[in-house]
Image 1: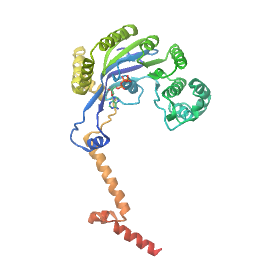
Image 2: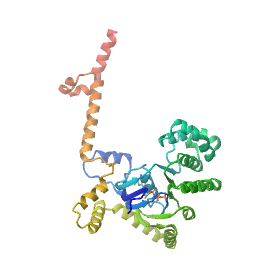
Image 3: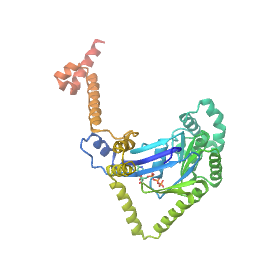
Image 4: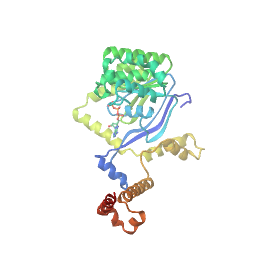
Length: 361
Ligand SMILES: Nc1ncnc2c1ncn2[C@@H]1O[C@H](COP(=O)(O)OP(=O)(O)OP(=O)(O)O)[C@@H](O)[C@H]1O
């Protein structure tokens, strides 16, 4: 891997806990034992680089991990392990991504542009262009929750291309627009390419991929199956889909179940060992390989999960907070409550005090 990349993704994984309900999630938080909640690995170790000015297509069957990867690159969700190095500002266009349903189209434009670092005068100067590109008429003044998916896509696309990002991530946003809007978007993407911007283009339309992409990555049930020039990867992917379609219904089900089972059984420690062993082969004199790989895996990751120690501390602080509130409400002093804890749960004492105060008044 050379150094002149715009985006580097190395050994990236993404794990989800498959809780059946919110209460199960809560129970698992307070449990000190390892929970038995099944895990699902949406990404099982993806490494790739995207060069400046390149348009990379992401293809793969439903649920293969394309959106997970593009959301990690755009910083919407964190990876579980691995390095994600993005050199520039990203702007993601997915159907409705980042749009607030309760705000109007106009308010969403301002909010998203402010979040992208634009000032109010800069937004004012851009507003007419954004509005005219989106072309959604009076819906501009309606809450976004009343929009069709095509309208959301129009608004999202228009904002994203006008805030002038270095890196544009387009996730299926062209699939819901009509032909006129589609052509406008394609022209805009071509303009971006001419300006040397980097683009990630996620689509099920192989035709769109062939028109727009310099290279393509095929994501296959959480793994990077192939990456390379558009023609050859698209050809191989078409071969796979043709093979899949030729299977019987039962065979298709079996294949999909097998793939999902692999994603549930994925062992992150075994993967880390595999990466360490591979690297040790190329750097036999480096005695630090294991530590370096560990740092690459977990060094730049903010864990979504709390350690047992942190959970105990959080719970203790929570209990203390509730106790302090109760003491406050009960009207007793801390000393009283320590000597007679039952005072906390005897509201009549409080009532009595309150009545006494009333009488004095
Ligand atoms: N929050 C979540 N909790 C549990 N599993 C999730 C979550 N988000 C995604 N997944 C799972 O991760 C896998 C990858 O999903 P992702 O949306 O990245 O796929 P995709 O390739 O973009 O699919 P599509 O082509 O249908 O848009 C799927 O099996 C999905 O069910």
